[in-house]
Length: 148
Image (cartoon, rainbow, N blue to C red; front, side, top):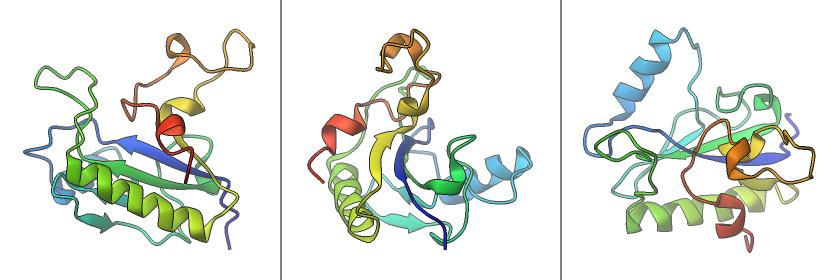
């Protein structure tokens, strides 16, 4: 069994209205990935889709996947492709509930955003916005989910 140290929160960086599970899978396949980027995807309706068993390694955060559960919400960009937290209320509720369930199964796991895996370039012990490799998930997941 894998030792899960983190639960990584992502956005798909796709349009909410036109993104489907099939389109995500097609994108990953085009990249040559044999497994999905996420274990779970939360649709704009709040429906949670499980794409991969938690015992399997997904492709969410390069260099860390062996110890992660990767969770994403569909969205994260506006109509111009700019990073934005555009989660629907249904997504917010479903994501919170899913993270509660995952934290129950993995009580030692730290919940944080994909961006929080960026390197601490100035070595000050904090990863700040100027150090983010990505904006994903387009909100501060550590702060939002600190009480789970």
